[in-house]
Image (tube, rainbow, N blue to C red):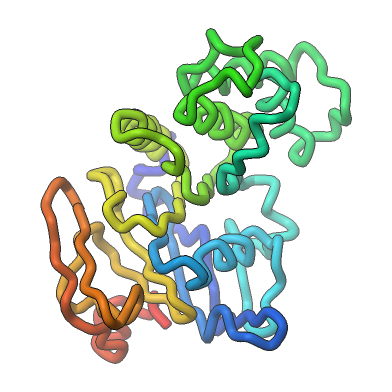
Length: 274
């Protein structure tokens, strides 16, 4: 059964109620209310330093908010995080380790199973299946420092998938990938979305593909938009109050000129916004 099953479509997989987080007394997120349902393909957008990665880490339980309630897959994150896959932002230093593609993927089982540092033939088979799923099985024995940016990202995606997650989080997954590689990765994520809820973070608002179903704008406050198209109602203040934005959504450019009308969004969004 896929998550597009009508009986599953309205199940909330992420719920935040009145969540606030500060770092060294500096506010990062303020009074966030957000609900994301099973089967969604969500783009989290916003400026650098606006709180996008912090929001994801709070959802996963990697950070604890000073205020508010967080549920992931219906449970507190510490109880459900093993059912989630996380692909952190690509770091250039990751390619410097003397490790093979298969070994990278096996690392994704360390937090999800009790296999320890030694992996059984069953775990290795699971890792190969994950590599097959992302089109990297032929590269299993290759060193990661020999990979292109797109190949490395697919390897890291396999690492996030190997534990069989119900929801997948990706932080800047298109970084260091050319246009062709981005299209291929989005196609792959579109296929995965038939079975897995997907949430990805990007500061590049040109990266909303046809697969995206909803958008979360983050700049201390959070606004949820139940569609991939950007309308004039979305405030430029969520990104940069001095600079209008261009967005490519479904292959069409949209100029963002208006401001968020919080009251109107509350009325239209059925409580999904803060």
